[in-house]
Image 1 (cartoon, rainbow over the protein chains, first blue to last red):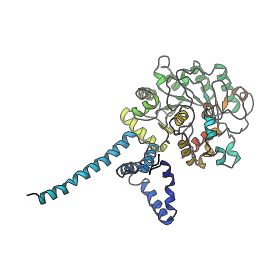
Image 2: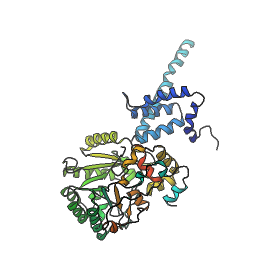
Image 3: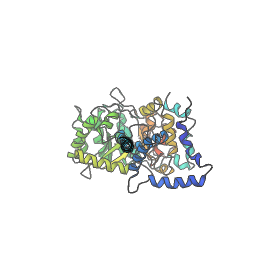
Image 4: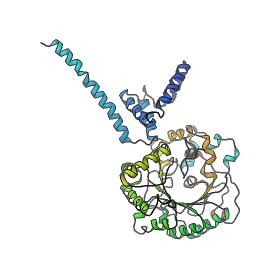
Length: 110
Length: 326
């Protein structure tokens, strides 16, 4: 079945550098150190990345970071909690925008 | 289709021998470790077991083969005897064999699933280990009950904790002469984590939750043969896992590949370069048996490689003693 998302395409990610190699190199030079051990561990950062992958709904990133985390010894329970953080933020962000709705209602209703 | 055929059909992954040019890599070096698989009987039937051991297996090493192992140890001047299985304790001559090994060798290792030591007829063995100062390698795939039990069976984690407490009480993990090592292996088609990080985590959590101490944690990459190989094939993960192993090839692991320093003996005396080759029945290229090497001098031999060898050279490398990166 044809689909816009093909798992094999993940391996083609580096082809994005073909027409703009300097920008691609700059991206990699940034991305690598961001994900490495720092004040946060690489493991904590990968869990954040997994949560963001879900909130941004990127199947490439979900596949990649799930595999990365399994190889770091992180289990499904921990990954599920990270996804709940993303989900709770989404819910909270949606609800807090309700204040905008209330502001409009307050302004317009007699 | 056996794994040899699976590897042959996997044309997207080049032969392991294509990854090095130095002919010395394909030859054995000093023979330090005599690894002896005393049988495939086991009280467990773990999902990842490359030996495909279990309660229904009947292959058991005879005393005649054990005697040849003892002769070969002295003849070739090994430094370590590494006893494995199955559950090695289930061999009827196990107690005798351990004591004989310890008479001639200062470094005897036994690889135990631990929970056998709670079964009727085996509860005396921890004391036998301590008396003979046997170094133990015990399997605990995770410090969480759910993960260990998923791989090894119901209540295996809880029973393992009981045995670990008993081993600690005997001095294992505390007395410098009673070394207690744990083995971690991934619960699926992915790589093990960094060994140092995982050891720290194991020590912290097992110490905090159960008061357990141990010496080292060794992280082992699952080898794509045996029961784990069958899982890879049936779940559609075989090619992907092999590609991951291939992509993670690290030339710095070649120097310390375990096959260069050991020979592995099967229950019937057949010889292999490692326990993985043994499980896949890829015999030493000389076709010698334990009875041959008990009599003749050691000469370096050409190692038998196949694509499963990428599991020993991926990332930080893997062996029966953990990572191998030089």
